[in-house]
Length: 105
Image (cartoon, rainbow, N blue to C red; front, side, top):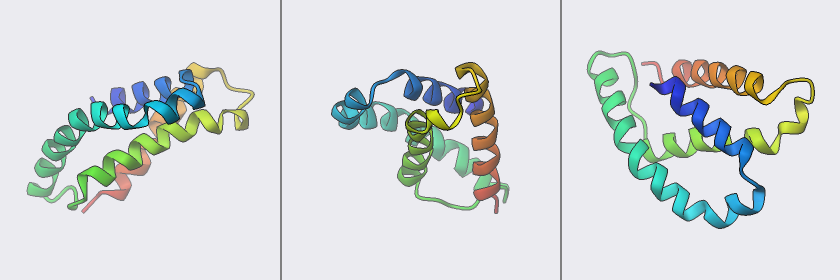
């Protein structure tokens, strides 16, 4: 499930113009945040209970993940050799590895 969240976020970031992202930021933050923060709470609570994850500020976790995905579109020019699908796939795996290593207990 978490693979799909990172992939969908990266895909939408690549397909949204910078202007639309700036003007829609408040609404997108609430729309995605209202859904994802409870998802993260459930995921992290379970991991904290079994000593897999450490406790984190869930809102900052959401902002961190969304920010990484958002910046991918701004940095697209760094990857001229990769088609979008391949870049999103590589970004997804990289981000999940980075996050899971960072939240381990």
